[in-house]
Amino acid sequence: MKQKTISELKKIENRMGYLFAGPWILGIIFFGAFPFLASLYLSFTNYNMLSTPTFIGVTNYRILFFNDSIFWESLGNTVYHVLIAVPLGIILGVLIALLLNNKIRGMSIYRTMFYLPNVVSIVALSLLWLWLFQPSLGLVNEILDPIYNLLNMEPLRWHQAEETSKITLIFMGLWTVGGSMIIYLAQMQDIPNSLYESAEMDGAGWFKKTIYITLPLMTPSIFFNFIIGIIGSFQVFTLAYIVTGGGPSRSTYYYAYYLFDKMINDQNMGMASAMAWVLLFIVLLITVGGLKLNKYVIYLGEET
Image 1 (cartoon, rainbow, N blue to C red):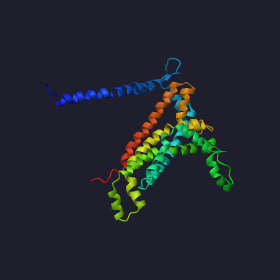
Image 2: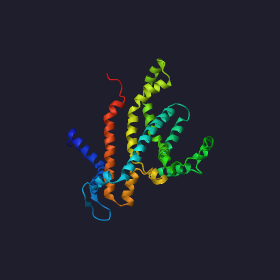
Image 3: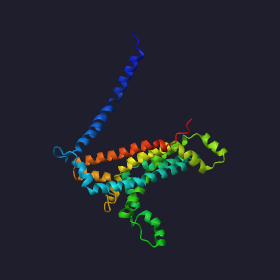
Image 4: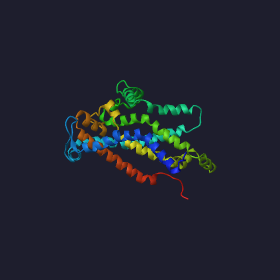
């Protein structure tokens, strides 16, 4: 029996690899690449999902940028959400990870408790927070009632008031910060103990060790969650849809919500596709810009 050469074995191995990866590759092509390219074409058409698409060039984009005030309002609401929610999520995630990075009895239970909201349906969480922030009967205002009486002020209306609706949804979104916390915690536990031992020999306490060792070595995971947080915040939809319905006075009418309305309620698939591509380019520009800046914010150790 002729023995196969190494090159022949590699070819067989490659063919078997493509064979096993075939279903995934076909799935990407038909359920990923095709809709991706189809939406690009539809963004240049007038298409109501009931008739044949009519090519109209860049009309959809021109309407969005120059004749649609709601487009800019929804984008402004979304940018506001990004600017507040992403930094708060990073700070809170890092603080929780620092607290949970201790070797005490039952720590695994605490870590599970903080991560648990991430496996609960966002719809269920939205309904829970909707009850908690209910102005007249909600638990939050019941707890804050002594403060309201002390300051002689009316209870906050939270998601029902234009001035507090955005902050309320941002606060609700922080409930799932446990996902990023797990990443920070994994990064912390990967830091060599020898660095902390050396710092202790020089008289450094917990605060200095955190500032000069932990946080600099956590910058890769912080930067990763920063980019992922921006991408996720630009697509915020479910909370606004369930809790506020985009109101009051469109104060929580986010970009993804407006895209949803264009596609489902207005049945304007051409305009919705154009909005999707605008969102893609916004996120792409932010991501590329962040990757360009990563060498300035990510600590990789001293050069030798």
